[in-house]
Image (tube, rainbow, N blue to C red; front, side):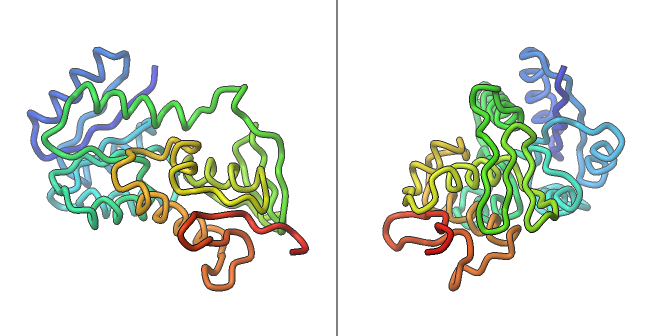
Length: 229
């Protein structure tokens, strides 16, 4: 049974989300402020986190930043902030998806199920080992190395890189990348994909102005640079 940590300073929201998740077969850990959620994360190792952005003591963004220092566990933000800048900031911190309040509990459960499914790829979807530019991506092991050194990526970042490396030189539109990586909502998809690409470049130490791996094709999308080009 997979475990989901739900953290929100409104007890009624935590109880509502927990009830729907438990009815769907998940074990639920409850937290009502950020530091308590961090302690539960460290001691109980949940499979997924649903975090409110506005929590006392340690807010959701700060909590996600702390968790991303040591873990790529799926994170879904639950927030009353509907502004695009807040959603993009969350994605840039490594969140996998977000749901804005007021929300449908059934939709939230569906999104939790989706991020957990992406975190454990089905065997038939696993790509072969891909390499290029000093990178080696092992699909079955879900691992990446750069010049022999391991590189940590979130699930979405890994899926995007696997897509791009699978066909070096091919230009992928942002919508194609979003759909292939199942990278969350289609709302504002261009900014969503751009945020994931920015994080991926940061993980690889890639310069967007003089890229070694991922090139921006203006007005179209992105591609993995062919070796020897």
